Image (cartoon, rainbow, N blue to C red; front, side, top):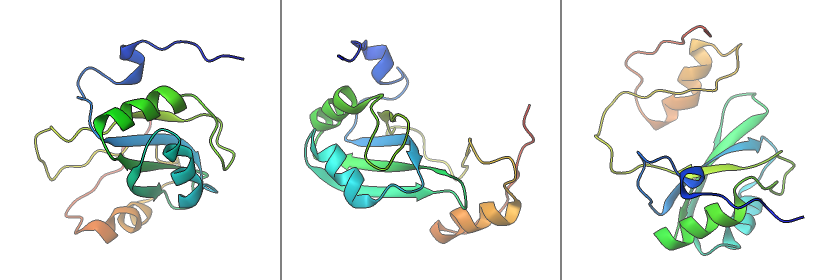
Length: 139
């Protein structure tokens, strides 16, 4: 079956300009770097790839830097809503903003309900010092 045609608004939020860096969510914890590299290489050269794992969650996400904005756009067009190697249900891909105001604040959503302060520290602590953190209760 053919994929439904997507409008530009489905590809990227208006607030995030196109870039060569993509944020991919909805990946299974079993996905590997070689699998993702093969998947995204169908759209162009993958320059950099980092899988973001969340403790013992069954989902993860990734940052994928393509060789150009055009290759990133092609990856979104080709792969959005598809099932990648590794068994994830469907990919959700968007441009990862790089033209935003720098800040030392980080907002993370989609954490498992049982996630703890210690788990959060372990997740982000390898990237730098966490001065203060707070896990908000679900609405």
